[in-house]
Image 1: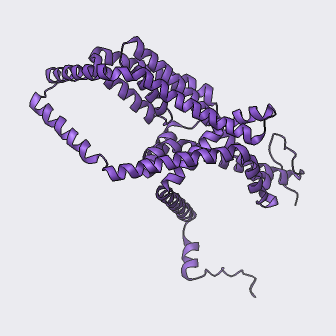
Image 2 (image 1 turned 45 degrees about the horizontal axis):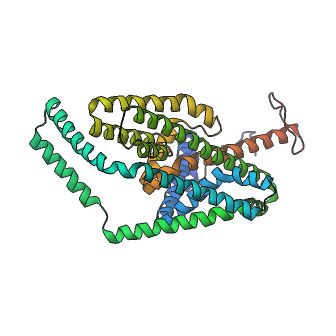
Length: 387
């Protein structure tokens, strides 16, 4: 609006909170907005984590079910290609899983049942050798070492659960295992029909994006499950072979611990390697322990620098810093179970968000180029839309 003298009056600045907000520099407003979004996101994640902790048996059962379903889905699809009904294919897959688990437990028991008595004597001798090595090389007397040992033993006794809580935990674990098996059967049998039902409930405008994001997340979870299984198996075979060659007792159970620990990235392999080194130190002395430590480091370096990039590919690769933060956060929220599921959740979330973002960018380019839906825009800069 122009006054009588041809001058444009200054635009009035609104008062109150709106005026204060408009007078702030754009950098301050951006920081405030991003900080508010971050606070809301962290609060939502914390609330979901607390709910998951309160419903720990159900949350663990669901996480294990999804992990196993992604791992065993190729077996079910293979059985269906052999003209088997969906119910029979899912049932055979679950029975195959139970056979592998019970067969592994029976094999471990048969190989190690006769070694416990010999291992006890070797551990007693190894503990005495370790005490002599510590007192002779470090400025620690036997009295101080006995005092530290007693404090550690009393701390373990205080932290051990009482029988009532132990029985309750065992019942929760048994219930979670049974629930996981039942859910796994139904997910292998009707999982695709369930997903189609979910996609049909999404609005037609976002249905294609939701379907693509779901497929990307499921492929990522499957790739992570199978890749982690292969890497864990290779780690267990490599470290177990080194333990056998070095004459360390209980080599097979230690290899099994390595296999299970490999499902927790970075931290699990470190803990499993430390257990193997400690057993070698107690049973065979410092020389064998150093050789076991060298073997563990060599296997883990080969896994991290060669096997993981080849097996995992770029589909589920995350930066080690992201993995470490995810494992730490999962451990703080839900303990060992949180450490197991934190990395696959992070990988799937990243892949889903990345897929949605790429679809939105593609839709924006199509709209700018006035291309019909489903046509990929070519490379090069996007011309401006006509006025």
